[in-house]
Amino acid sequence: MNQKTNIKYDLKFYKAVKATIIISFVLTVISALVFFAGANVKASDITDQLLIILLIITFLGYITIPLLVISLVLFLDSSIYLKRLKNNGFDLPDNKMDYQNDLSNLSRTNQTENIYANDSKHLFIIFLAVFFICLAFDIAYLLKWHQLVEDSVALFIFLILFHLLFLIAALIFLHQRDSSKYIDAVDIRDGRKVRMSITSGIALLLIMGLIAAFSISTAHSMTDYIHKSRTGNYDDVSYFYDSDNLYNRAI
Image: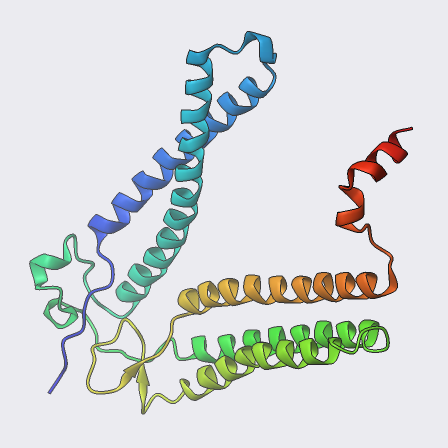
């Protein structure tokens, strides 16, 4: 017996997210223009009213920019989903609630499934490539620091363990190629699991990639700080803020 397959996106959502992109883009441009215009105003010419306006515009930018990014991601994901839904022979729903949010209630012209199984193959290759890229950066980190800072070995092991997540994800995607166990997100569920789509996989990759880049950068910064602190090649904060030393440097 078929399980209920939720309709991920409908045309109503697709149109709404397009409108959100336009509105958030316009507001972002306006806030940026006002902000840069206000930055060129002399401090003596800034009134309380102008300051409030600038603060509101700045706050608006903090809202509209993330909204624009999220809207673009949802627009891309919904566009691909609806296109694939149509390619699978389904009539695109204007409002998924008219069909009880059940994909099996949509009329369709042909019966197809698993035509996007190659998503898993592509994601496997991408994540595997990113893993080896991270591995190269990890080895470069070790070669640079292991003779200078003993603690770098521990950080290297931590980086390797974290970046193994890319390899694990790649193997999971490779397993999802099996059409006897997995189906596409635009297929009607029948007990098999749903494989991750290419757009969801890329979104996951971006998040993991940003965290990986931050981890490598942080490891270098921490190790550099440790090295300088042990060799005395950094400014001692207590010395810098000591009143006598400040006076001596001043004269």
